[in-house]
Image (cartoon, rainbow, N blue to C red; front, side, top):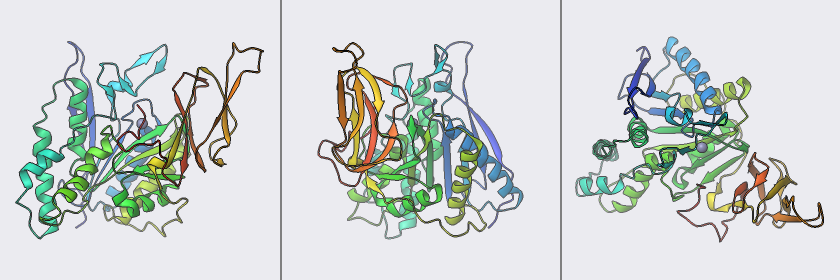
Amino acid sequence: MVSAMPACTTRIDLPTPAPGTQRTLTVHRYGQPGTRPKAYVQAALHADEIPGLLVAQHLLLGLEQAQREGRIIGEIVVVPVANPIGLSQHLNGRLLGRFDWESTGNFNRGFPDLTAFVLDRVRGRLSADPAANVALIRATLKTALAEQNAVRETPALKQILLGLALDADFVFDLHCDSEALLHLYAGQGQRDVAVALGAELGAAAILLEDAPGGSPFDQACAGPWRRLREALAGEGPVPLACFATTVELRGQADVNDDYAAADAAALLRFLQRRGVLAGDPGPLPVPGCEPTPLDGVDVLTAPAAGVLVYRKGLGAWVMAGEVVAELVDPLGESPGAARISIRTATEGLLLTRMIERLARPGQKFCKIAGREPLSYRQAGQLLED
Ligand SMILES: [Zn+2]
C-alpha cells in the first residue's frame, strides 16, 4: 500500500550537560510507522565528516518529492545531524568531531552489543516461521536497549540513535575518511546487498568483515542478527534481518552539490530496488569493484615523526613492496637526506590518505585495499581508534 502520510519531524532532547545548555536531535520520518521495509539514514556521527550532512539534505529533497508523488511504500527515518555534541567541539578554529571531549572515546565505537540479552530471552521461543522470529527478536532488541538507561549525554545520544535504527531493514551510517575514494563497510553475510549498493554509489571498494571490533554503529545494528543466527542455529531460522553499512563519502573536503546529489540519488534508487520507495530506478549500474576483506586492507603506519611525502595518489593501483610514501626528518643529517621509504605489504587500491602532512610515530596514514587477508591484521582490531 502506498502511503500519502506527510513527513513528520520530531525533536529529541539529549540530557542537559550543564545548566543552561541543551542539545537536540532532529528526526524526519516518512511513511507509516511500522511499515516495511524500513530504512534508516544518519549523517556525521563523526561530526567532522561533513559530506553526509549535505547528502542528507539532497536525500530529504528526494524523499519530499517521493512523498508528493505518493511513492513512499515502507518507512524511512533520517537523522540529518547525528552528532550535535561533536559538532560543537571546536579548538583553534577547527572542528574536531571524532572523539568525545567528555572522554567517552570515539563517537562511533562502544555501541551496546545486545546479543547476549536477546539470546537469553528468545532461546527456546523460536518457531519455524522466520518472519515470526524476526518480529520476536526485534521486539526483544528494543527491550534490551531500553534497559541500557544511559545517563550521560554521549551514551544517551548513542542509545537514541541505536533505538531509531535497531529495527530497520537497511541502515546507512554516512561517514567520510580524511582523503578518500567512496567506499563501504558491510558484513560478509550480506555481500550481495553490499555489492548492489556499491554499484549504485559507484564505490571504489567494498570492505567486508564480520568482526571488526570496537562495536561501531553498523555492527551494533547488524551484528546481533549474525550472532543470534549462529547461536540459535538448532532452534529455528534467523534471517539476517538488518543490512547495516558505513558509507565513506570520499574525503572530508569532498563536499559539493554534484557529489551529494549523485550520492543521494544512488541511495534513493537503492531504496526503490528494495521496495522502500516506488518508482523505476532504471538498470543497476555495473559494479565498479569486487568486495575485498577488511583484513586485506594494509594500513600504513609512520615509524617515526616526520614530514609525509606521498609517492602515490588516491586511486593508484600499487604492487606489494612499492614505496607509497616517504617520511622526511626535517632535522636529519645531512639536510634532505634523511628519508624513510614506506612500502605497502599488499597489491591493491590506494583508498585513503591522511590529509595532514606531518606524521607522528605510530600514526596510521594510508589504507590500501588488497584482495588477500594480511597476517598482521587481526579480527576484532580492524578499525582505527
Ligand atoms: Zn567516520
